[in-house]
Length: 308
Figure 1 (tube, one colour):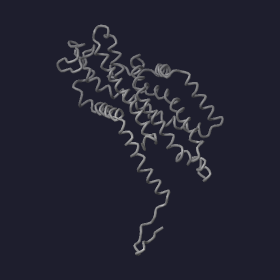
Figure 2 (spheres, rainbow, N blue to C red):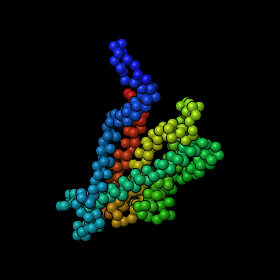
Figure 3 (cartoon, rainbow, N blue to C red):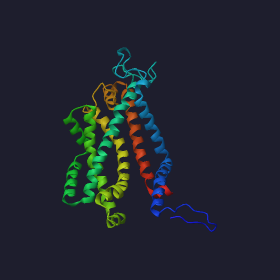
Figure 4 (cartoon, one colour):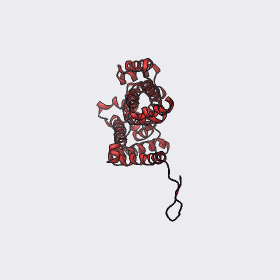
């Protein structure tokens, strides 16, 4: 639709209300989210910390000063500040700094990849059970409730013990244990959103169930899942390290942070605390960073804090 001014000058066509709303939503929502996230200094610092850890891990062969698997028995258990070894050496005479740098490849992969794999599975299960309901939905949630009866750590240990040690089995065990928890979050959000007016309006307008799920429910269900999944990554680092510590995770001599902590346990009482303490601190920092980012994303997705 076009119009003219009093002097006959043509005006550009007036866009529809839906087009304007869609454009504003596309442009403003990411900007509002990022602006809200930037105000959280802890989250911004945590993002920087994880980016540094990720980059260092990716370029580990170029950055690490020594081979993480080769040791010097003549210098074993040398302390922090030893010539040429900034963080000292472990019980096998291997450079701790080099093993930390390479260990990020294992620990960060185990923290992030299982969550990324479990997320879509949980999304499918939770949305289907929450939207369609009925006997099938109830049966699915009851099966998940059975899994809830087992503590997540014990369930992960049991699955890892059955599958055997190894990086792939650890990720599989962690991913399986995360599906019920993430699916429960999606299920709850789907049930809440399905009862709201905009879903009823879309249904009254003739939208199919697939359109309602994709266009109406999915964007609103993703937000709590992203927040929960980000926070879970911190737990996954600790859980993966615990599995390696117990001997059912990544196997030695792989430079995994949990393996390094386990190796340092045997010499801890002999006065060589740096062997176990240093990787333990790195695990703590990485897990805390993921949790702080999760808190920041949660606040950034809160519309009240976006506009405040």
